[in-house]
Amino acid sequence: MCWKLVAAKIGADGTRHELPPKRGRRVISAATAAELNTMLRGVVNDGTGLEAQISGYTVAGKTGTSRKPPYEPPRYMASFAGFAPAESPRLAAIVVIDQPGTNNNQYFGGKVAAPLFSTIMQYALRLERVPPTGVMSAQPTTNGAAIVSATKKSEPSTPEKSGAASTRVAAAQNSQVAAGILGRHVP
Image (cartoon, rainbow, N blue to C red; front, side):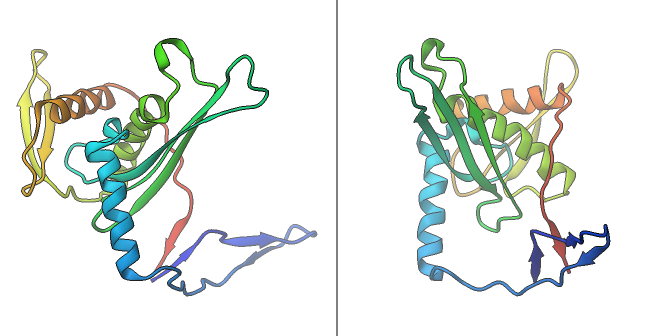
C-alpha cells in the first residue's frame, strides 16, 4: 500500500506534474511500534487524554501543553495528537489551540484539545466509513433520539468513561462539524 502526502507539483508555467507514489519504509521495529501504541492507548484510557475517547473505537494519542514566551503574563498552547482505530490505524489528526482560555486551568491539552479531537475524529471516522472496533448499543434519550455507545469486549465500561463518551456523541450528533482530512490513499 502506498500513501501520498503531496499529490503533485505545480510548475512555474502553471502545469501540474503528478508525483508517483513511493513505497514506505519501516523506521522503528514492530515491537517498538506495538509498545508505543499501547502507551498512547493508555493516555486515552487512563491518563490525561480521557476526553479524546470515541464511543465504539479505540483511540491512541498524546496530550500537550506548553507555555509561550514571553512568560509574563502566562500564555499557552494546548494540543492533542492521535489516531483511530488504535489496533489498525486508519486516520490520524492533531488539534492545536493557540492561547486557550486560562480560567479554571482550562488550558491543558487534555481539557481543551482532546474533546475537539474526539468530535472531529468521530466525524471523520463516520465520513470514511471506518467500522467500529467495539460493541455498539443504542440508548433512548428524553427527546426520542438515540445515543449510540459502545464498549470493547475485552474491557468493562465505567460510568465515568461511557457517560463522557455518550455526552460527546450526542453533542456531535447535534452539531455541524467541519473537518479537513489531509492526504489521500493511493491504491
